[in-house]
Image 1 (cartoon, rainbow, N blue to C red):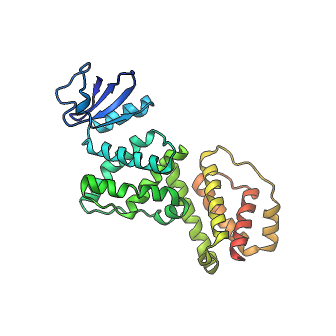
Image 2: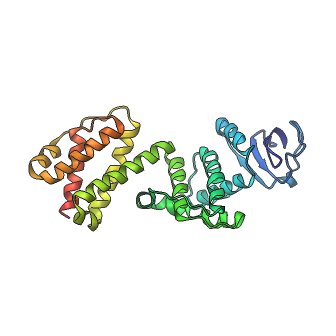
Image 3: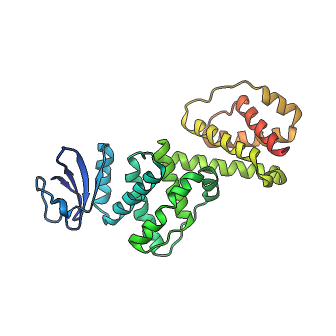
Length: 276
């Protein structure tokens, strides 16, 4: 392999025999090395093949200022996730996860716990991704002798969600926060029904999840038929009042009008929850 760029004493960008660009990690691999030098394959401990040039360049900027162990940890975590799930992850997660763990693990090593206020919603909405994030626990323990908290597992879960769904972290966090706030509005209005949980509650959550992603990422929300809105407004005034409160909250958060059609679907799910 030929060196194309030296990122740090232990990390270089190189081209393999087939001409593909790879990020290579090895103790002292980049120390005193120059572009064009040959990399001894026996000195390479790990290889990462990244096809996206932008991700590759940004990763190089990050790891140039970080111990290479963080890239190794991220690489092992992502390999474990892909092996378990049997599906590829968006390459950008190498960048976001390496950057995240470089900060979070330093904090966890110092015994400073960062509370994840969205942890209950993350576990509820993304159980599969949360189980995949738990694969990080023994890997981080092996490298740094640190046992990460469930709050940190929740943060890693969001990185996995973004990588699978090609979402931005800022949008993911916004949707999760809005779901949490909407559930708080419903719980305050109907505490007994809320505590029942069950299938109607699960259906409400899934609907909120899909609707809010559309609301956050789409330029406009299409007006749907308002049959359920008219029905709920006349037959279920308590649920209607709650949905009006939710609609006002969402309009303040997003600046977008919540259509009667969408309010009608929220009414339907809320009525089913109340009367389940």
